[in-house]
Length: 102
Image (cartoon, rainbow, N blue to C red):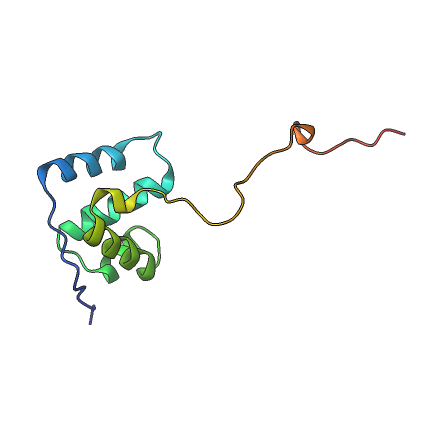
């Protein structure tokens, strides 16, 4: 029996249009599209156990984004700063691996 989430999603017109725009946009990062689709399906009343296989992701991921959206609305699904040093690329590593000529 599917578990019922305590986080019921009801979208405003602005949130619905914004999430649909993100979900349809081909140039959006995959993570943003996935998050938008999770919230759109949750707003249709689907359980996490139904949403997860539809989007080929885990139930825990669906639960995380449903909960975060419930608590923070649209800002909650945006990418957050992460701990640690930011990723940087050294100019000397451009063009791939070094070639060894004999």
